[in-house]
Amino acid sequence: MVIALSQADLAVRFFAPNREQAVVNHAAGRPMAETRNIMDEAARIARGQIQPLEALNAAEFDAIVFPGGFGAAKNLTSFASDGANAKLFDDVKAAVLPFVLAHKPVVALCAAPLVLGLIAKEAGIQGARITFGHAAEGQAMIAALEQWGQQHVETPVEQACVDRTHRFVSAPAYMYGAATLKTGVCLLPGRRGWFAKLVVILLPRGKPNFIQELPP
Image (cartoon, rainbow, N blue to C red; front, side, top):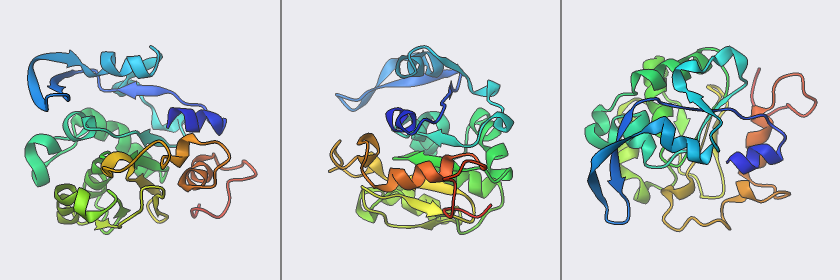
């Protein structure tokens, strides 16, 4: 995602929750007896250029993007422990709600559409179109999403689900077990895939090619 946004000449700044997280050994599939700071861990991907989520001011940005991964289920939301009774963590809710209320695009990949479903619920939105990909590979998340009053839209791995009304963009990515870099068209410059559509959505108003994808 970072590469794709950079290829589209979109300026990116990184933010992460500044709190402790339980550590999971993904090779063994089990929790570990230690904690680590979420922002410190995220700083490796951001090459150190990162700020605490509390510093995010929605007025300074055109959109917010959540790249996904298992952290969306345990660090952005409590879904990993609470399932359909999950909530957004307070710092995540405070960061994303202003984007929703200002009708700015909110983009979520992989498991991060959990954030879309929960923030839609918090904002009193019903029937938002959101995807986790194929029903067979995200059953628990889809069931929770629908319980929260939102609509799941089955979407192929190389495409995205765009809710034009609420300016939500979601894409399944590695929710598909068969996902590969080859199917991740967002990383391939010059390809006309879902990311080309996403870029148009994210471009600020006033730029010549911000056209037709979403209503103003």
